[in-house]
Length: 175
Figure: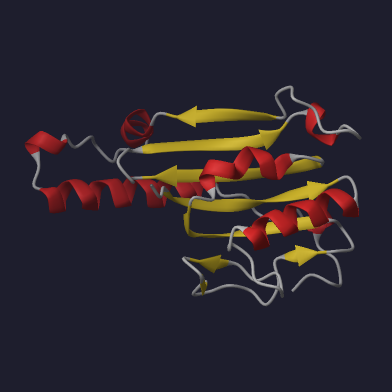
């Protein structure tokens, strides 16, 4: 069973070895092509940059898009990470959002079985109230009204939480 989620963010790695292992995992899963361009459902992303990797800074950028099953493996992408954040949301049988960041254990020289990320779950109904978006109830709305409300909440959520790429993480090799 597939799980669709919008994912956006970046991860910086402690070494080329960890970055390469992540790139291999993403290529094997069909999320990246051989040129390190993101793919969604096996197709190039609509606005995919020519590359999502800055080799000089050991940086992987995940452009905001709807990915199939990427959120299921997000924690494993942080093995070897020294910095980063992934912002994730989904309405695929749920109405969920979370922000994932590496813990110090993620950057250990040897991968660990301990927790390597912190995950901050975001209550989207509370978020909607805080941002004056109201709360719709599925049973009290038409399916179209409810879907439009969810879309509006997620658009505002990502506008608030999606990270700007820190200026110190851009290098001449990044496109």
